Each structure stands twice: as C-alpha cells, then as structure tokens.
Length: 247
Image 1 (cartoon, one colour):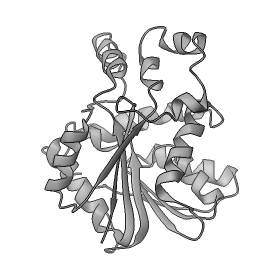
Image 2: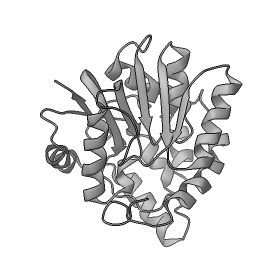
Image 3: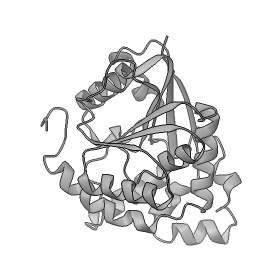
Image 4: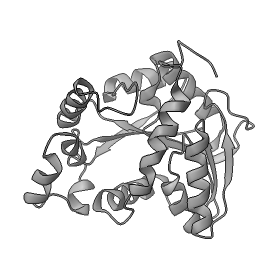
C-alpha cells in the first residue's frame, strides 16, 4: 500500500476493518438511507443494465440496492472485513456482485470499464495528493459518456464539524483521519485531477446534528428525522456531491 503523501495514516486497513463492525447496525429503512438513495438515483439515472463500480465500498448496501434494480456492480475495498460483509449482504439478498480487494489509487481495471464510478465517504480520508490521485484513477476507469460521482462530508455542515471535534477530544472518533471539503476546495482538487467540468449539489441538513450530544434526540423531538428533511437540498447539507460526465 502506498504511504504518505497519498495516505495520512499507515494503519488504514486496521481502521476500516474496525469500522466494519458497525455495519450490522445499519437500518436501510431509516429516513436518512431512503433520502440518500433517492438523491443518488436522481444523479445517476436508471441503474438497470448499466455497470457500476464503487471504489471504497464499505458495507456495500447502496451497491446492493443498485443490483436489486438490475445494475451490474463491482465493489472495491482495501478492507478485507468490509468486503466480506458486503459479500455476505449480497448473498443474503440473493444478489450477484464482483468483489475486489484493491487499493483505490491503483485500480486493476482497464480504461473506461464502467458506466458509473462512484463512492461516498472515502476521499476525505486521503491527503490532498491522495485525493487528486483517487479522483484521477476513478475518472480513468469511467467510460466516455459515463458518470463519476463522489460524495463527501460538507465543510459547511457546522454541527457535524463540532460533533467530530468533540468526539476527537473525547477519544471516541473511530474513523481515522478525515478532512472535510468545501465546494470551492473540492472543485480545485477536481481541476488538478484533470476533470474538465464538474457539478455540485448538497443535501441532508439533519444527519450532522447526530454527531452532537443529544443531537439525534433533538431532531426526533422537532420532527426533522423524515425522508423529506434528509433529502432537502441546501448548501449546508451534510452530503456534498461532485458529478462529472466524461466526454
């Protein structure tokens, strides 16, 4: 595995193997997951008959939802435990997928191999050099006319940033190095990676509050934990998405 400057920490696999222990607690019927899928499908279009590659697949639950809709999906992760969970999730649903333990900076696929190449919650764990390299490598395996989609925590989500700071000070932050991005900074990184044109959107002003003490209780009490609120598009939304159509 390449070390710095691409990766901030040498124990990357250990960190994400540990995070994979939380995947069993994911509630796919929860409003936030429904909202994320709604916005995802708006951006990528109908999945049926198309090839998708998730680079840094984690639990693989979104890729499984794509497979249920007729997509051909490939899941890539550097964490063996994460990929094992994803494989088990697919098998439990009777779905087929392709699985690869690979470094996202050195993907073993030909140029233009996939209709859609995407990830969520991945590149913020790299240094800027690594971010640029990962964007470039994902773009390489996107076919001409295909779509690159990358979702990151939004630096404008102030409740999330405060909650993360509190968790770090208490020694309870388990996700390792994380560098949240603003739209302007994300655009500069995409330009460095050679992307000719990118579009941005952001949604979900609710989930960032959950990282604060009593934040989830507060959003529940105010009636904000609904699909409509999680799907709400706002520049302060937690999920900042970059979309690039490859010429």
